[in-house]
Length: 261
Ligand code: DAK
Image 1 (cartoon, rainbow, N blue to C red):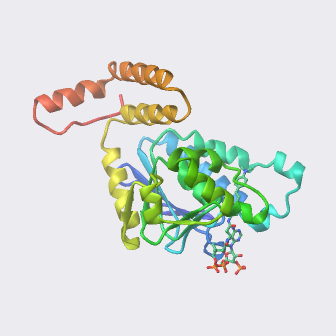
Image 2 (cartoon, protein in one colour; image 1 turned 90 degrees about the vertical axis):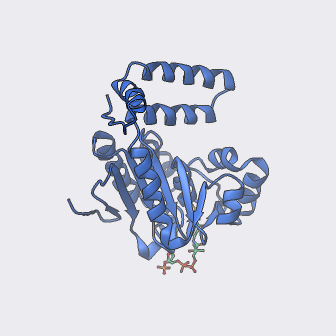
Image 3 (cartoon, protein in one colour; image 1 turned 180 degrees about the horizontal axis):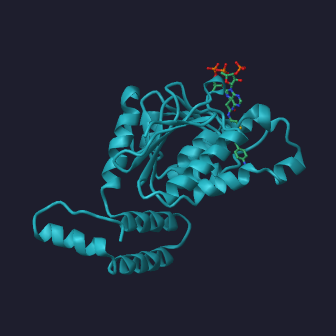
């Protein structure tokens, strides 16, 4: 199967369990307009339903992962328009996606773009990437989870500095503060993200799903509740065929063949 072109995305055919999704609005540095978010939602709907997709890599261009929400579109929305904003639903869809998502970030990763990257489970960045929440310069503030996810990713002082000054940080600073897990040369960012995604795609899908859910649970609950969730998730996996297969394969000194059961 070949790549599918939507109007604002290029959607790769799943390969080795990994689907590559490329934001494609070069004229606006991949600014996230309603159409792009709607198309991304539709792609994630299909990816969730497909057994061929076990992980998603989300990327932009070498110049920009995404330079934020589309400011020109935002300018047309008044208070009522914001309350009824259809983009809220699309952000919810992205938040609820249960399979692993890896963001491969080069260039500008700003505002809603940085928030989108933070919806991913892992961020791999090119060394020229710039991460920022510049909304304050427009007289607004982050609205797609930036104040909360950035705080959890980089801690209070760095989050405050980024949100209150609007100044961007480098890929190196982002890695030092925990926002990014790996830095690559820009031309290898997508390749590296695909390799990490392929490694995850070879694991038992139910274990991956519950492990992702457990880590995310830990971001918004106390330790005791998080540990309780982990124990339940761990126990559920004891009833899966893939767990039996993983243990049998280890004992028989062969590679496991997981089938998501
Ligand atoms: N929106 C629309 N167009 C954009 C854009 C954006 N965010 N960023 C860049 N562009 C367009 C530029 O207008 C320009 O188009 P033309 O004017 O040529 O037609 C083209 O992309 C190239 O940009 P530049 O000419 O400006 O390129 P430079 O290299 O000189 O500068 C830059 C690159 C990234 C530094 C600059 O473009 C820039 O500062 N862009 C704006 C960055 C920004 O402020 N981002 C935050 C936007 S506010 C919410 C969810 C999300 C949000 C809010 C609510 N809810 C669910 C409630 C998010 C808000 C935001 O992200």
